[in-house]
Length: 307
Ligand code: NAP
Image 1 (cartoon, helix red, strand yellow):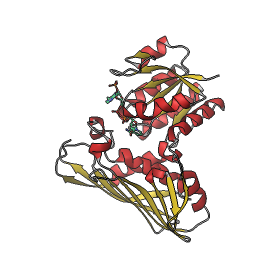
Image 2 (spheres, rainbow, N blue to C red):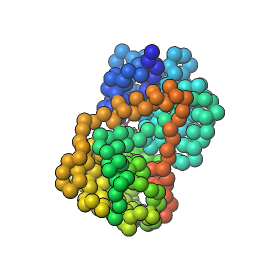
Image 3 (cartoon, rainbow, N blue to C red):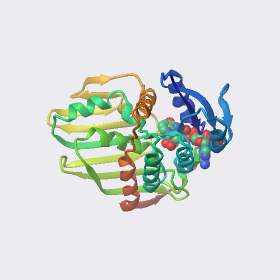
Image 4 (tube, rainbow, N blue to C red):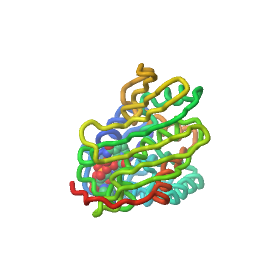
């Protein structure tokens, strides 16, 4: 038997990934959508989640694909109505609201899944397993892309809570926090804010850890041409590179693993497992590093950004 699921926020990621992944899933059937202006052909549609939850009593799970600034209210409403909830990344606009949702889901006895799609990329598990037996000397994360190509016209990313360049950067942090063998914390950061925007267009980060002398990251939305979504590790067994957003892992220039993009199919399989086992998965560690960058990062104001 499949679980009837509703999608909220029918924008780019809902259309590119969630709808196809639910279509291929054996655990879920897309039964309804809530979006202010968009709809999906052949599926019951509502302009608010509240209306949907009232009308669609058979929908027992909700997947939220809206921007982070509006995620909390909908998640809270779905949990209060006894529905299981999956959150797109980042799980919220603040840490406190994510932790509040986790507590509410626990009391309501429903599943809350804070998803991190980049962790499901084809080579991430292999990289984690390979690194577990090695000494890591240094880590360089380069997550750079052209904002005009990857986020065309998305004004919410420039509004408070939209995270700016940390919207893709948090994908790198979600991978970093799953492949490295120990805890890290942010030591220094510098954030570049366009004079007319509330969120940064670029950031450099320096982390501290017990196991590697140097862990640093560069996030930049001003890169044009081919994006770089790469983590390069200097290890006791040579240079290892997790590239293409986690889809490919090479050691000393030789492929260890590469594979098809099944990130969202894997996320929905995991959500189904969590529901079946009555558990939740709410790891906010990538968001902690972003919050720390906003807390201790030096701020530079640069030229205004226009689309
Ligand atoms: P998007 O294209 O802007 O779509 C978000 C949808 O949410 C909108 O189409 C809008 O539909 C609805 N929405 C509700 N309240 C909104 C508000 N106040 N402002 C703007 N939209 C609002 O964004 P997206 O790229 O799909 O990203 C959504 C989430 O998915 C983000 O957290 C992002 O980090 C994550 N994500 C995106 C990608 C990607 O490649 N784009 C990849 C992975 C994860 P209605 O107007 O119909 O309500």
